[in-house]
Amino acid sequence: MRRAHQRGNLLTPIALDTIRPRPLHLTPRLLTVASFVRPTDRLLDIGTDHARLPVYLMQRGLCTAATAADIAEGPLARAARTVKTHMLDEKITLIQSDGGSGLDPTAYDTVTITGMGGDTISAILEKSPWLWEKRLILQPQTRVSRFEEMVGRTAAQKITVSEGHRKYHIFFYEGAKCSQ
Image (cartoon, rainbow, N blue to C red):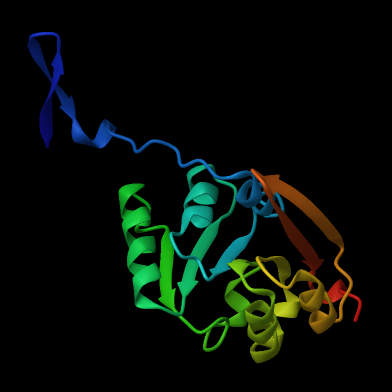
């Protein structure tokens, strides 16, 4: 299929298969989260909302597979639009899920849970203890100190990122090697 592209007063036909969406860009917070994902990883992004993180990683070949999961239909619909806009519908799986409940633990190497309250992230980890066997990248929006107490594990790495006037805390846990 071809369509016309206007160049000056002339229309030049271009092949639709040469059209590529613009690369998605992330905020410093999500860029820091993305930096922990390895190119060989199969990613599970819990609470994906717009699926920006999985799209960014897949566009750049920074993970081999990505699943975007959310509990609510609205965020999943937004995620579906983002995935479709960036022509990744065949590479990113969308799943409606309550955290890690009902998901296949063997399908993922790395799990991200970002942009939720610390209590919510702690509850997700409690309901799905298999998540602790994976590389975990967690970024609670609220109650960070309480989150650290509730989790009761020492992060392999903790990074604070500034975005405007806000500071975000990102915790990285290295799977089964986590200290309890």
